[in-house]
Length: 419
Image (cartoon, rainbow, N blue to C red; front, side, top):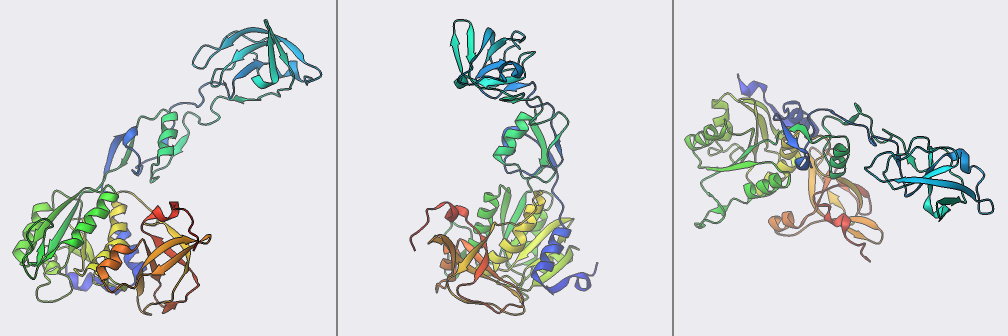
């Protein structure tokens, strides 16, 4: 295939996302025990195996009786019923209730035959074998009828639902002990360049530690995506060997560096020699415009620029959303919140610009402050949010309410500041 004629170049941010999603399908399926389902994505609808509750049950500790018998009861007209037994949660139904009778019942216990209501114990007095009732209980009072919460055969969760702890509880109630989910993809993270050194090794003069892939791996770990790390020197042979070593072991690749276009930028040359299907190269975003994406043997391959701000933004805005699709996830990668801008920011009319920012809570509202530190790396590390300036918009003014991507939701759980 002639990739030069098929690959799209210089496309807009939204088109890049759409093309990414259109070329990615979930990595496969596996069955996982209930206790391991949290944060996994369901691969199919889940159907309840049981009714819940499985019987008509009491919602309170009290007395099961016939509503007809206490229809006129009040403080001045106490109705006297005969106690004929008791029933506990998990036990049998107890004795049947007939006219003028009542049965002691605990929360969750099965409603006895003949009873259609439960009178809470605070409206009763017990004297010997008699029950004095001083309140009414209409039919169904304090009763949870069989299958009120869940019916056997009912769909209780849908394909592509992200499993949360409350949903795990619901599935347990529905009689589910395991479910099919989309498999977590394994990702190969590649660092290219003679100057790149793995953290923990001695650093020769002129070299630098592989902060790009280290941060990428940290994001993958946060999203429970297994990954392998490899380093390749600036030769076609080394880059090609690294790819061949991992191509049959992983579901996707993320490379760092080697795609801008200089004589030492070999990544695309190597991929094209292996007949990858290039989808796009260069996206109108800043930073991060040099990103390329395609498929190699049907597996997503994201090529990120080597400069730290560009590498990070291309990963967060395009690569990570794509990898999460391999997990079966849909929707925005990061929560979106609205905050008041504390200082004006400028964009570029012909691309989508992302600004490092600090989101804070003060004086009863969320505020977002653009970070303008001299060190780009400290600005990257200090942010908890990103301001997006859409293509065609050249600036956002101080005081405007703007939509913000929240990278760390911890700020939402901190006390409100005094400002």
